Image (tube, rainbow, N blue to C red; front, side):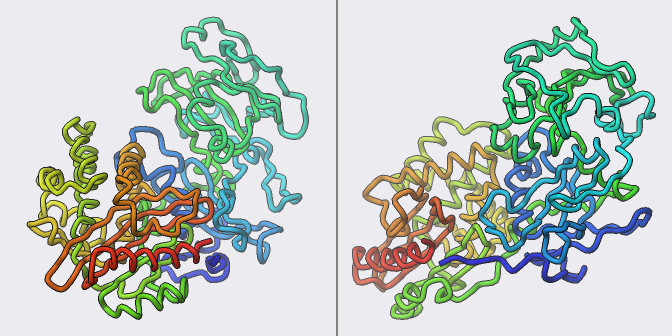
Amino acid sequence: MRHRLVPLWATLLAALLPAVLHAQPQAPATVGERAINAAPPNFAIGLRWAGDDAPVSNGAAQRTWTWGPQILRSGLEPYAEAPGGQRAVWYFDKGRMEITHPDADPDSRWYVSSGLLARELISGRVQLGDQLSEQRAPAAVPVAGDDDAPIATTLTYRDLAPLVTLDGDAQRAPPRTAAPITERFTPGSGLASDPALAAYDARIGAYDAVTGHNLAAVFSAALPTDELLYLAGRPLSEPFWATLPLNRRPTEVLIQVFERRVLTYTPANPAAWRVEWGNVGRHYAAWRYGQAEDGAPLDALAALETPPELRPLAELSPAAAALVAEAGNSVGVAVLDLQRNLLYGANAADSFAMFSTAKVPIMLGVLQAAQREQRALSAHEARLLRSMIQVSSNDAASALYPSAGGPAGLNAYLRTLGLEQVRMAPAWGDSRATPQAMTRLLARLARCTILSAELCHQALELMRGVTPSQRWGVSAGAPADAAVALKNGWYPTADGWAINSVGYVKSRTARYTIAIYTRGNASMQAGIARVEAISRELATAFR
């Protein structure tokens, strides 16, 4: 069963509803206006932003922003092939996100695209359609260094015209892999070799045969090829050095111009900030609209973390809903489709005893503490985590509970995530949760918005490595190519067996988090069979 987002261009929501999932940008201000139109991103924009910048925002990564911490302006801009001749755009410091075809497949990587801003700044041609443009004067805006530097002392986009390949092959270069980069560009004088620049040991690392340009190794090594192509496009120039004012001091900077972005390498910077994205989004907004405004700081994950409206489980799978209905209130189910941010459930707001599924928040608490303290897990912690998650050791859970923050610390942490319905108890096995809250907690892990990429990977690998005898539950019915990260819980209560299963399913065609809680089962096997019957129906619905 496939689902579509409501067309994003159809409705512009009122400014009083900034956190609504499908909030739309207002029309852009005209040149000279002071109005700020920094509406928060919709879900697709938020997901793209989070994948790149959430680790910087939450302190998990020490590096340059990929987009930036705020939206400078957002609106509708003319584009001939977009519905109604306008597309939605969001400007950040480092670039622009845009949705040109809102009725396209939202699962496509290119559903959210990144504007060809560097090309337009250099050429002066504003793209108004696939084959339509408007000619303006090239941008006399500094490419890098101090934005307020006098034009005569810096390098502008207008100055770059002799270096770039825009419409032909005049500037194509032969491959020179591993060659040192010692060319310096000075506006008005052109390129000249400077042997002293060899001291920085900057070399060629790759070659793009499409535009005919070599890539600096510091840039080609910074990102996978496909990610560099998505964010920056193809190189328009060879890498070159320039002396630019930075913090009012002349500074050597290695620069390479791409279709969408500019990348810089500044040897004088601290190691983590030597490779940086230029402020092309801010520069472009100033050039096109006469000014670049600072919007409100971006609530990093507002669009992703706004709880989606709960939909009846029958909308996703009538068969799964029928199985839950047969069991009455002894079963609660929630499924969160991560690709479309759609939440389905039956008895999903009911509270259930967590038993060993409480080991998931304990794990997250331990990892969050390590991240907060900026340290690696100790060997002892790593062993206990493996034992707790992969073989469901209760002793390991009890040993880790205090270092995870205990009930008070973990509940405070969960409240910061808006997950008060996951409630840890002094005896961790007595903790309680609603199915929908557990799917949202797992979604935070799946999207890697609460931990660094490394710690997220560790957590998911632990859950994917559960011992085979415990890999029942929400893994049932998953496609053969699916990676299933799960944790189960079971306990014989006075009213019958409680059987719980929660997890994250990622396959070629689907990504969803799922929580199935049951109580009052006649036996452990009967409870497992019930959970797996529901899981199979839900897996079928995602194919």
